[in-house]
Image (cartoon, rainbow, N blue to C red; front, side, top):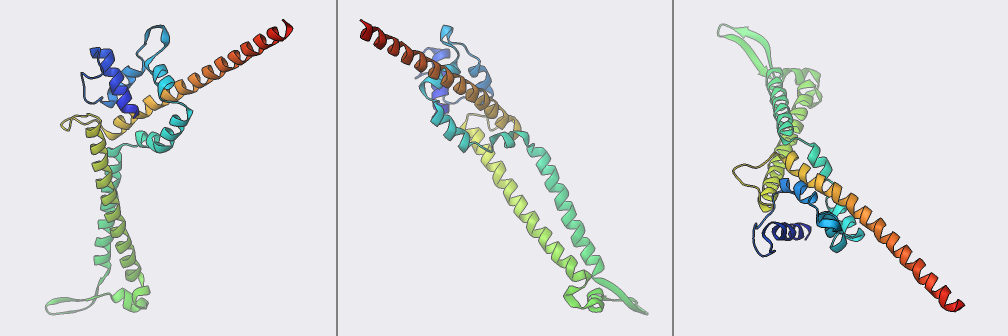
Length: 221
């Protein structure tokens, strides 16, 4: 609802009609929209706060987007790099498991004789070092699978959100930049909403005093 209202206002400002112009508003345009002045009546944000963004609306909006600021601080490229490092760690553990599971116990004319799991046999089966390493490798593999699935889902949802808000599929901004534009807009919108709320409270107080003064004058008259 907020973005539809912003788009309607932006089209009216630019084209003189809310029924013409863009069908979506890229989030990088939100800062310019927020700073646009509407004569002596304040900015576009003041108009939004007077017509839509009251205290209840802002509370619900901030509650729904409570993780937005955190998303704006996270670099998806950095997260992918961390995932790649974790993948390398999991492969290293698996390689170490394979190496430690093969022990030389003797030799023949054809070369060394190797047996699988000799270390475990000496240490008491699955409770031995190789068994523990196997458990670690399985845990790392499962964790890696979960992280890769989560990363793929997150990337897909970010791209869906960007397309929905009008970003070109051929040139999408980094996720932190995308969320940063929205978070910055909501920050100044929240400050303007608080300012508008205080202004309304002062106006209501002055009006109440005015009515009280009039009542006193009537009684005295």
